[in-house]
Image (cartoon, rainbow, N blue to C red; front, top):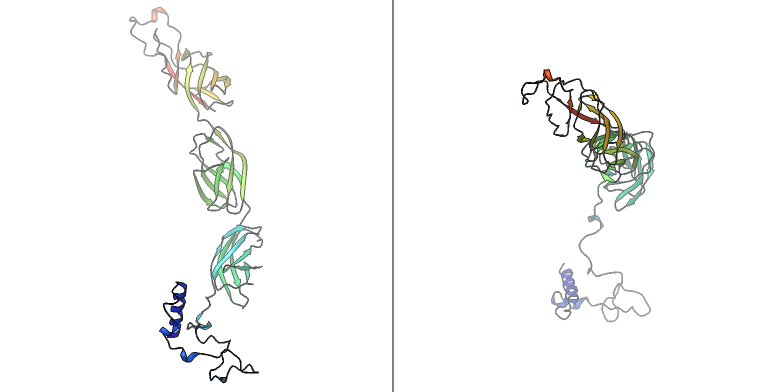
Length: 359
């Protein structure tokens, strides 16, 4: 041990540029350890001293200078154990490259997915394989059979899933403001599935099952959007699956008054108008004669209104908020039935109607 320490100090001194600072003789007496490096005359004998009286050096011996006190028996092999399969799922068609993590894994091991064996390659202490095709979706146990006959199993270690398919998105019309949750039906979905609408990621994705996802749609401009679902293994696209529309509203009805008999043409303005626009006055549908989508305006023939028969001679106009938009005016009563005071109004005054639209 002293000899080992001496050599270490000598090496340290040489490496630090202080080769004259210390010698082996400072630690041990090596005067008796000199050897004759020359062979005996005419022989290769190194076991006997020559005429000088010193033993010959054996080139196969290191004289214990590099004996660090341990041998091969000090290195113990790791136990054979399986820790996991990454990734842990893949399509039923097979072909997914997976790795088997563990300890004590051996090159040349067979890996079984259910009852189907595949060859493996040892890489950085892990087994790398490609999954075989399966007969259907579901979990299978993974077994590793080592060349020495040992085996280990992870029960339900890998799950086969069907091919990724989008079959339906409901509802398929959402406002441009987003914030509506849609349900995506299909096959092959996974808990970490990602959903996008023409490139815009969903605000939130909720995994319900391999056949169903829910996604909170992001805001987008008016028009159609493709829906894409992406998993670790595949991507599926449904073109024009969702239509974004401008939220429907009524901002103006002009003119804001008309006879109870109806038949008057008014202009209804708002947002979210399209060619399918329908207009109602207190639940009575009006005749829409034209819709200008660019200007978000519609020409509407007002229907007859069943309520209201009297009105003041100075009828109030509608304040034209979002809904109560039109005042129906009954015919002017004959002079004999008018109120005696110009400031009095008959109790059956003009009726203000609600105007609402449906697109």
